[in-house]
Length: 336
Picture 1: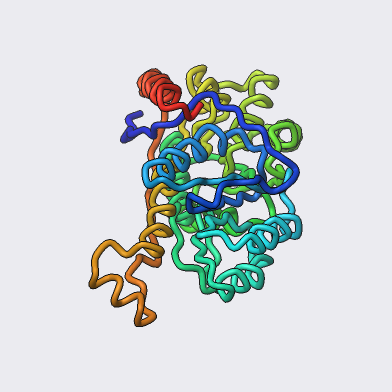
Picture 2: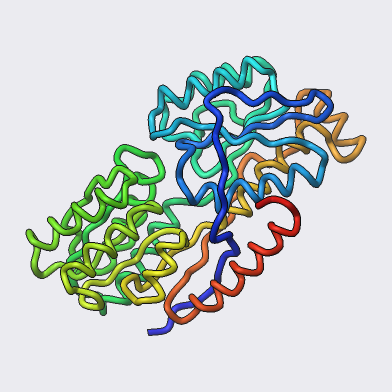
């Protein structure tokens, strides 16, 4: 099987200590915040924060990473309100559903610019969304799975429920799979963004459906959990796996060919472009753009779709080489 292979640069290891209170910072630099849906996901530490820190350093600003310890819309809203009270220069926000809409619009009404990244809130006044087209990601996953299965089989989906990105990806998967009448989607399991839960549910699904031969994971924790259960069941290669992103666990599973393909978001790209939109909003780059902003028409994009890449056993070693290179670059820059 030949899959069109591209890859995303990321970091393999990064550590960050989170304070329980808002950080104290100098007022000499502009202050920006990135508020994620959860502050403890390694993916955010290895991909997103170093890219944001590098971009903020480039323009002489500071970026602070905040978020609840666990996925909780109310707790994330509380963090957003705390940050809003500091009247920062801008906020990058990762919404988890429409439960954020009221607070997002409160932030904007206060005059604090807010850009959504890695999740959108289209029914708000957010300045811009920078991230992945999750329906297209789902369609891409479905096409990969259909090719792996020879267009025939039974497939289980694994994701966080409820979640807007999950819903969009599921819609894309189901829409694309409708083109393959001999492939049946047998269900959607709620792994709650947990590797342990994904592994448990996958083991149960294999027991309940002995002829299942495909799993599609729709979050960064799904893939490693699915891979663990397949290894324990002795079904490596028999059950095909397509997942999302390229965490160290996913890279290892692809290398062992427990996971056949990972659809990788361009995380660094949507973080950097999201920050650049905020900065351009605050500092129009030409007098004409400043004039438009003064008139109430800021000339920044409303939507930035950064696309996806694919990692397979064919290019995983090349991926690792690039990751090692970027890790060294970040170390040299003092970002790790």
